[in-house]
Length: 324
Ligand SMILES: C[S@@+](CC[C@H](N)C(=O)[O-])C[C@H]1O[C@@H](n2cnc3c(N)ncnc32)[C@H](O)[C@@H]1O
Image (cartoon, rainbow, N blue to C red):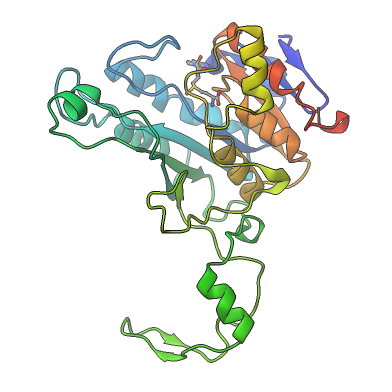
């Protein structure tokens, strides 16, 4: 099986993941993948251009990915799956399919997987959906988040939250500069010691909610610091990828993962030199973030047309030769 794209840091294969991952080139990586970071095709009610399955067919397919993915992982590896909501066809009712799919995946009887933590990615600039019920009938609110399930084979997958700290709040900076605050018992019954908060750790611990843009202009959004100047949002139409796609008349992948999400989990859950797999890679957001963070990557997508977008990512001058 030869890759459609190969760089110093990784390989991009074209084909269905459930088949590609069983070929000898991928099987030799069994037990060596430190992180599977992916945004699978969402379970939709009508087929989109990237070939989503529907209903029970989706559920069965998704569940059967669990043993294939689990086999690839190191014992302390992680799987992070981003999945949005879907809605019942023609009804203002949220579908249970995404949740059922994740539940079936994590509780697959052969795999010993467990949910380590759920994250929510809130994106205020998403288009109003489900459009008919939100904008015409006005009886539902805008579905504006995706969820990410961090899954692993052990209770203690490799992780280090001190690598993905958030900037301190203005209040905390003030407190650190004055070295004084109100210690003692809080109404919540928590006892705050006299020096509990006075050590500058370089930032505060990340939350499991990512707010991609300000919900409120008067409130400071504090997303984790990402190395290499990565930003959380995809809205930058001036970046190298968007500009090059435009010049070449290529429509960028319609469901790209926010680069910052990939960068956050790669930095949080892996070390330099580790191997990151995205079995539904599309434009290869994950592979690009992995390369820039000095990790190795494997990307797979069923659609050949997305390899060109991955090639564009790897022409980005922000990548040094060593990381390509
Ligand atoms: C939500 S998109 C991923 C987008 C990607 N994270 C990015 O940032 O560009 C899901 C991708 O899964 C691919 N896909 C669908 N079924 C697949 C399968 N069985 N095996 C591999 N890829 C598949 C689609 O072609 C699509 O590009």
